[in-house]
Amino acid sequence: MENASKALIIAGAILLSILIIAIGVFIYNSAAETIRGANLSPQEIQQYNEPFEQYGGDNVSGSMAMSLCDAVRNHNLGNSSDYSKQIQVITGTATDPTPASTSAVTAASVNNVKKTLRSGYTYKVTFGYDSETGYVTQIGIQQN
Image (cartoon, rainbow, N blue to C red; front, side):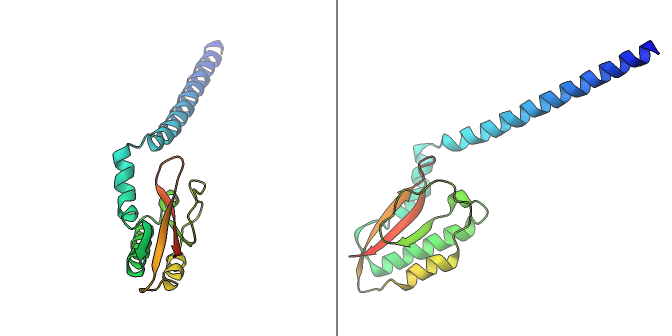
């Protein structure tokens, strides 16, 4: 009887050790993923932002602003499962919004801004950046 109780104690200690190791691995993986996202190289950030920043400026034609809306809509559809990569288009000046939005930006919201743009006008296009990743997360389009 004495040997059986010692065997149960040893088995319990082994299970407890495995549980502690599993929790440690989980915490390490979570922390490592956060650090990987924060350590983006400047080249990666530039490569991500470049397709949108090429449309920026104070005297952007209406057709270029409409092309920007199309590019953003396609980007958002391609990244529909990653809300942190969604780009919001607004009428007005862009701000630096809080990172990692919790919902997708719909294609309809981008199309609503696009509908207000006209080919014969010029627009000021500004960008808002995620403070953690440096990615463009908001684009403001304002008529001159």
